[in-house]
Image 1 (spheres, helix red, strand yellow):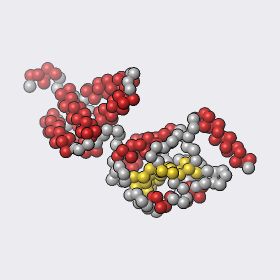
Image 2 (cartoon, rainbow, N blue to C red):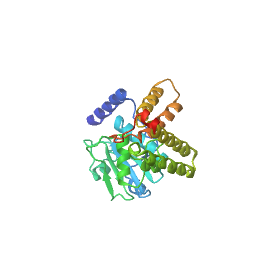
Image 3 (cartoon, rainbow, N blue to C red):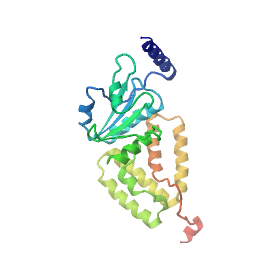
Image 4 (cartoon, rainbow, N blue to C red):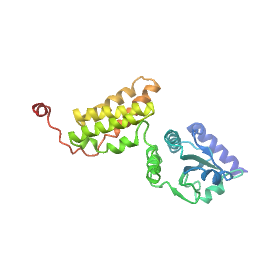
Length: 260
């Protein structure tokens, strides 16, 4: 009884310090009764085993991932299992079944249509939005990219900034053709941003990526509406596709280009 009271008191103090437990939009609450039956209903499921009332950066990242996943696919279940080590010890046995206890919270597992086929999120990786996306993308055929990004365009434009001018121009025409195949207005608009950036990089070189990133960040940091911030963030996400770790393309000086 004393342990229960102390646990409740500690939880109250933590909530006062960090705020009430953060909701996880789109996440399904699983327990010892519905776990197995729910997992098998989806081709893939990403499940987080954690304390009953989670909070903090890791949970926030998982909640953000849930939102992104729901926009990208209907083939992935995003769920949580809340484990209590007091009272009736809800879901404690379920945690033990997957070798997750309070010393290892959160424990995140990717299930592939069966409770017997799962991969655990690597312990050495930080639980961040990008790492969760990468983990799912590396172990499934699903693509959950940054908001506004299109997989077809991302794949086709790898190392675009280092390609020769002629190859860049050919890719521009190729992506225009792909844009015309898109049926969703939002995807068409995002594809337009890709093409605009492709043209700008072809005309001005890689310096455009750096300068445009600074410009968009300045605008985003200003007094703009939430909708405008989202629009700017999507542009930043698309622009990030063109970033390269090492620039190998030699761009002629403007005078030289003028002579050609």
